[in-house]
Amino acid sequence: GGAAVRLVLAGGLDERLPEQVACHAELLAEAGALGLQECVELRTNVSAEERGALFARAGAVVYTPSFEHFGIVPLEAMAAGRPVIAVALGGPCESVAHGETGWLCEPTP
Image 1 (cartoon, rainbow, N blue to C red):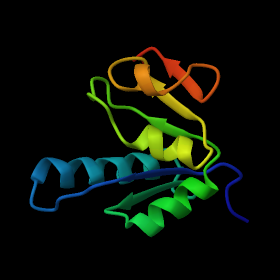
Image 2 (cartoon, one colour):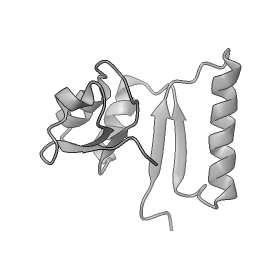
Image 3 (tube, rainbow, N blue to C red):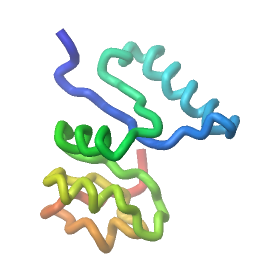
Image 4 (cartoon, rainbow, N blue to C red):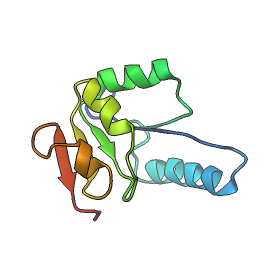
């Protein structure tokens, strides 16, 4: 059993912010509507230990912010020996070596 490929979305969720709660619910609903609930997992407010375990099991780390001034996630991923797939805007352009430590992609779906 279990999915051969798994997408884990990990990030903060502040339940005091309605837009974050709505986005979280929308992501869960969309995964269900597409029949992907077995291979998509949403993890919120993960501890440093959990984050380390996620990096250790990851085949790659996808980093999507378009204009993040720096962003620690790509560095954490690379420190764990995982390639980073990031938008070619902002901080990742300076921290991700395209084709070496990951890939920089156009900001399109």
